[in-house]
Image (cartoon, rainbow, N blue to C red; front, top):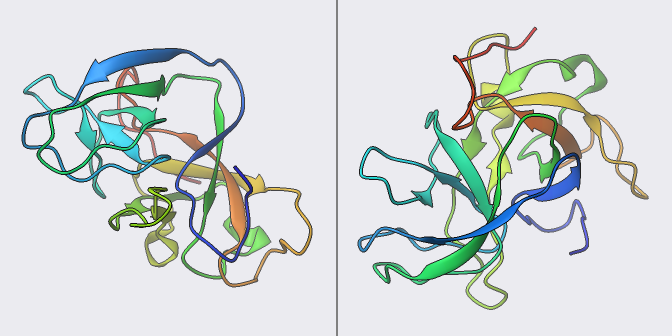
Amino acid sequence: MVMTQDKSFGFQHISGPWEVIRVDVAAANAVIGVGDMLNMPAAGFPDRAAAGDNELYGVALDPAAANSGDTINIALVMPGQVWAIRSDGATARADVGQAADIVVADRDSNTLKSNMELDFSGQGTGTAQLKILGKVDIPGNDFGDTNVVLKVVVLEHFTAPAAQAGV
């Protein structure tokens, strides 16, 4: 998948451990796009994550229609991984180390790719889902640009011991 400031793409794995598993999504699942972050709710079936969810479980590698209860492939979220995600604002170099949640939107109906982005307006030092590590080194991707593509780690993943904050 090509990362660009021009179009949302959800989450894309950059580095770290990689494990793919097949999972059944909830029978009443939200529409899922390729690259959507998934949460593990108490019911035990992964579903599309929302801002504030703190049991982030994996990233969808397959799409799923709403209310499908499909079986899909996901990349598990685990410590040591770095992910790329597009900011919905002009994240600056001074924002490195801050935490932020995701902004959720339905997938692109043509490509079935995710439209999730990092919530620029919610960046800060409090507890959140992601921590900003820097920007992805791609042509034309500069700090301060609208929709800069960022490197992040997931703070609030399924296996995390407790919520963590930004700096």
